[in-house]
Image 1: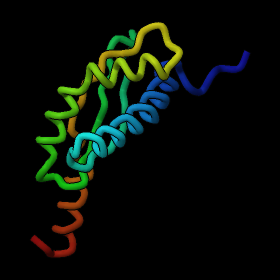
Image 2: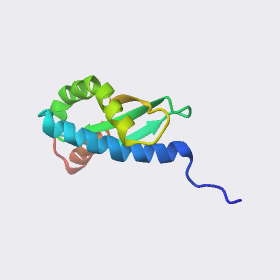
Image 3: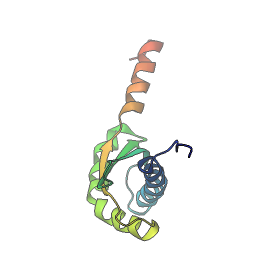
Length: 114
């Protein structure tokens, strides 16, 4: 039997990234939140929790957006339970992904800007 290249947690992470990205996009429009997007989702091996990495278009408004998303985590999880066909939807934990910000800062330093 050939080995699978993707584990179940990888498939669940990809599905969550797609669905949570859509839900976050809708929440940004409905609640007038700062522009945020989902960059990655990591699910624990026991599928109990999922860490959702989020980036902001404007890094100065990232803290406001993160507070709003953390407050909406239970609502988003409930919406996911209606959209997905899994026994138990993982608990959502939002973390800010500053890799884009660091990359832009490094790029500016290399160009000689401050």
